[in-house]
Amino acid sequence: MAGAQATRTLSKPDAEFAEPFTQVTGVRELKDGRVVAIDSRDKIVQVVDFKTGSGVKVGREGSGPGEYAFPMRIVPLPGDSSGVYDMLNSRLLVVLPNGKPGPFITIEQPATQGPGGGMVRIATSPPRYADARGRLYWTGQPFTPPTDGGPPKSADSVPVIRYDRVTKKTDSLAWVRVAKGNLQTSGGGGNVQMRFGVANPFTPRDEWAVTPDGRVAVLRSPEYRVEWYAPSGKSHSATIAYDKVKVTEKHKEQWRESRKSQTSVMVTVNNGQRSVRTGPPPANIPDPGNWPEFMPPFLENAVFVAPNGLVWVNRTRDASDESADFDVIDASGKVAMRVVLPQKVRPAGLGNGVVYGVRTDEDDLQYLQRYRLP
Image (cartoon, rainbow, N blue to C red; front, side, top):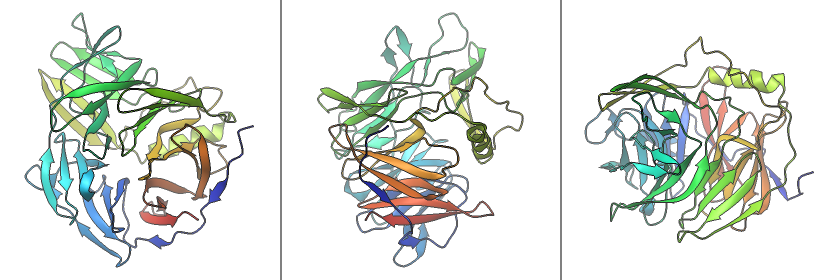
């Protein structure tokens, strides 16, 4: 049995924003309690004020100053600014502390070399984190370049890359393993199509996170081990005990149902020119098959970072349990506590002593909620 830590069960939100969203994909809390939120399906960024119940839109859709074409995620920046990653324009739009759109951040992204061969990184791998110094972090793309004129090949692991916006230099801090068979390619030469995310959803894959002070946490799967990397490169690790959960037909059905609301992304590289298309998932995608016997300890995008540097891992669980169940991991690699959200509330982000969740109603409209930790 997994070790017994103190469990904090959250039952009622202390606030809920009355206006619905269609697909919340990013939440960032500001120091005064306001929240920058992204609705990627409606392509809207807004500042939500739970005190007044108001929501103020930031910028507008487009490719010009103060605009975004496809906002996907939020990267917290120093000084209460936020970086909204625009996938179609491959850049970050800075949202200033007053909620107004600011400048863009674009990144020169040189190719990086991986063990056993070259590792290419193209502009579609978005920055995921920033530290208190404003350095950005992302991973390399999970493929190696072709050597015989054919399509790229899937890689086993990718580097975690740190980018210093002042010096324009990058370095690699750690390597994370990707899901096997997660890349599908077609074409060759100057015309290559790549589709990501085709692996079985329950295939083990590593996750990672960066704390405000620049430490990198790599969560290994399926062994459930956390490896901490200091900014200097020094590391230490700790293994976390967990109870294995068998994959059931209900797990598979829940995944099939969740797939209906996902957004399909297609990246095309034609003679060096990159294009990205988005839309609903194709209706004829077959089941991935090769279902594993056991669930991994966590799934993709299961890791969140709190402002105090604690790392929250959304654990897998029995299919009959529809509550998010977090292990909260401290700097030593130990589970400091567990936090359980109400049934059918999806975690969206963390603030100072609060958890942001998303409630979905019978019409598939989403409502942003705030829960305070007891």
